[in-house]
Image (cartoon, rainbow, N blue to C red; front, side, top):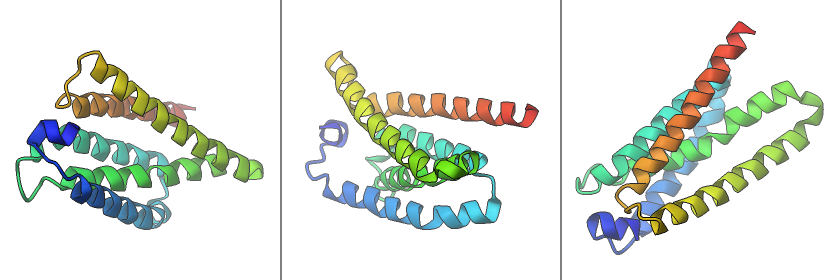
Length: 158
């Protein structure tokens, strides 16, 4: 319904493909990036910046043939890549409880997806238009980025 409302798109399949291909690319390359840079907290900050840009540009890019799939690709890539830096930090913090912290992180990720979907439905029923929903999601990503930056700054001081 969001794509239909934004640009009259009736088939979401190409957009789901772009999101999925992005996800595969993101999950393939994030481990190498973490190994090379060695700063998962800062990588996570970069992921959040790109994810926010994807959300904010989604409604604006749909009318541009060459760019209309790019926000979906970036969304998929950053979404799927976001777990590896989290797991890297958790395993550094709790090496003796690795399986448990990774499982809890995965559960929190799925819970967040469910809560986010429910909130998206609630705000749309409350009157938020489909055009506004990606902007609202982008704002939530910016809140997460702010939290990430606060954690990085307090880690350095501590």
